Length: 63
Image (cartoon, rainbow, N blue to C red; front, side):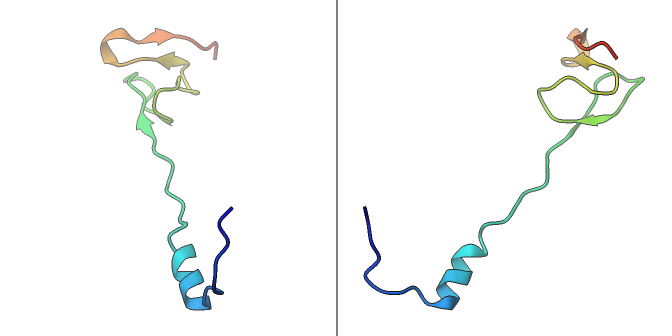
């Protein structure tokens, strides 16, 4: 296991930690024109229960 030879300074530690940022959750608009809710990509819409692109939507959840 690698062990650092010298202590890392505070400024170097903080500079390294400043890159640990979170990213906003990516959402997409529901393909159902009657719904239009925002949901996670590649998941069924929690509002209307449909999944899939515009041409081949299918009902997968009972809402």
